[in-house]
Amino acid sequence: MSQITTHILDTAAGKPAEGIRIVLEQPNGDKWEKITEGITNNDGRVANFLPADKVLPPAVYRITFFTADYHKKQGIKGFYPSVSILFETTDTSHYHVPLLLNPFGYSTYRGS
Image (cartoon, rainbow, N blue to C red):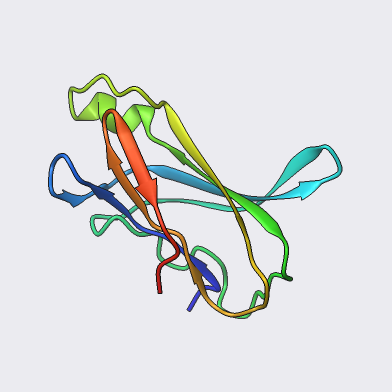
């Protein structure tokens, strides 16, 4: 299993959000460096977001969900064209960073 996983639920539609591009980055000086990216499947997840053998050190990371195209495909004008979440790992265990999305709001939490 990938050390960092995510999924997106469209809370307005009551279903997983398919087709959203997600990028995971780490800081590199005053810039962000891409680690990986993927597109959510029909379950709102990115399979094999990171290779199972890739271990990221404890650090601050940023995961960005590009939501504008998803809302456009739904025929909805969303308020947030993207959602970026900064989070910090404290060890090399599994971290799940889900996104609960609707056109005018979102929430997240540390999942399991």
